[in-house]
Image (cartoon, rainbow, N blue to C red; front, side, top):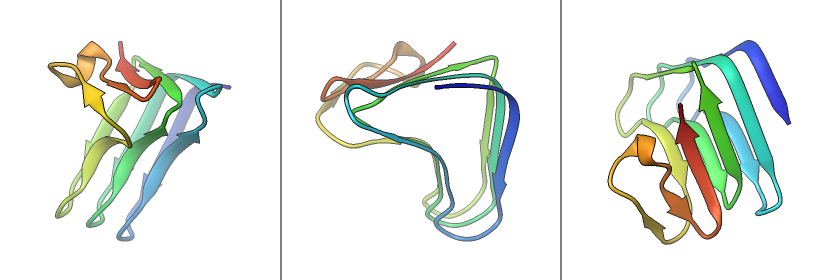
Length: 93
């Protein structure tokens, strides 16, 4: 799936912006803007899926809010390195 020039925003608690699941799933977003102002929010959610964000912006305000969230055993040294999680990854370029 390709997403371009789009905006996702939420003000409620537990807002989940972009959500992808399945190790065969690939999502690429260009110039995507995701914003949240609620507690426990997650802007980008990967459950074994491969997500690539290019020229995109994530902005999250709220207690325990996260820019991106992955399930599984992860490794990597920083968000832009493309942490791996059970075959999935979130990569910001």
